[in-house]
Length: 268
Length: 268
Image (tube, rainbow over all chains, first blue to last red; front, side, top):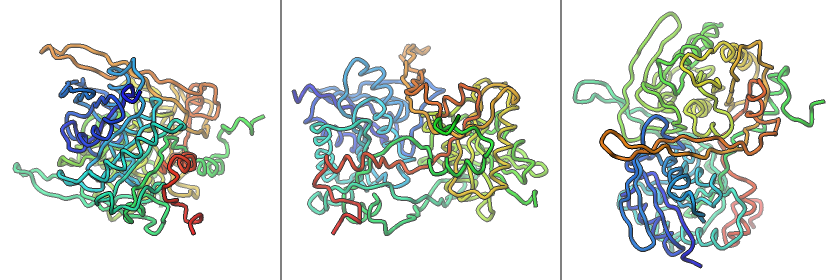
């Protein structure tokens, strides 16, 4: 039974990253694992798709119960390649994206390739988890992220879950025994302000490089993922994709009084 | 007074696209226009940012009241370059992203570079509008999109508006007199299923190319942007960026009973 399950793994740091291997190890005890990950680093790629380029698929590793592919597109391209081509005839039980080198809390969920892939995965009828560790270093210690990732995957595979379900899981730095447990949170409000690093390339052309600082708009809000991370909790935020601003939909009726009302109940 | 206003224009089709010129013409009567648009086509780039490459800025055109720059990054990079560098000392009154060649209704709001830029713009304290025409052709007729775009820009600049405000505006094909007016909508539910076009390149390597079909999960829902577009209305959806799924946040308390409750009110 256990080995009949199928887990899809992807990430945005690329097929060769340490975090992908860690995610595969998290998934492996639960069944067969297929990983389809980007050929190159795709950090900050959000939910981007490749429209105007051909994409190349390559099997990079195969062993008992694990297949790893690299795909030359974005994280979302990888998810589409998996569900719509490689695994088209199969039932995927869960998708795991990560383990990301660096957190994706707060507004970072919008820019994150890890979360772009997780969101895309949740469109295909299985629970999807984006798992990130608040440590950008190449030799980060994934022990706590793996332990909590395992707990979350186990919970989702064993319990009844309502779909669609997409979780943004962010793990603080530290060994698992130093962490305070899982905390269910909402997305913190905040934004980035960029300082453009400005320099000249070897040919004398001026270039710019993004280098920003996150501004937390609500540092004291204890129900947010940022607060949880800063306070050594594993932050779990369920994510949805209806971006409609229903509050503004009401406000806009005043700005556009001649607009046709789209609420069927209020039309004659 | 009128000419003291500053409008930022961007897009995802690139600085040389016909749609950018149309957007500049929409903005021009309302004040000074600065356009910062991608050097190359960035369709489907979502809210992606460039983290691991230097970016080049180039002024491509300057005339009375209009400056046009190309920037070698994504649409969001362009917005950040404008607000955080070029216009850092100035007050931007409105941001207009588009006019996009192709609609960005329903789930396309998530993949769209046009809307990625508009969302990013709304983080900088001014109303932001993503304006798209439901016609992919290079010689699309932008008359109706320009007319309705003008009406919307005028409304936002003249009225009091609550911020943040980001509008996803999609205009059907047709002359403005054939359209039925503005309709305030919510985002349609649906998703893409991809058919990967598969072929061999001239060197015998197999490649894949995304080619999908949109599945409308609620074709009869008259309060959605898809329905409005199909029925010759200009669809206006206000967009927000808190992705928290509050319904699932409640459900998950059952799945993770040992999780710390992040709702301050319910803790002792």
